Length: 82
Image (cartoon, rainbow, N blue to C red; front, side, top):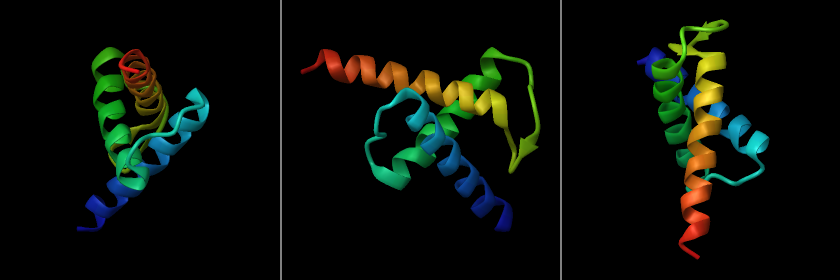
């Protein structure tokens, strides 16, 4: 149970950092940050070998790069719909 909570915290922090890097707010607040953190982790580990430390089951560098990619892609498609 504690590892699940730790994963939620790390995912949320990674999503928030990625949103600050891209300069866009993640829709959904804390839940959106957690979702982007988890998606970013999946994308980052699929595209790159493990880089940097692993905290809470997340390879930090991979997850952060993947979350930035997810937010950038989402922002691109959300902007086109307007």
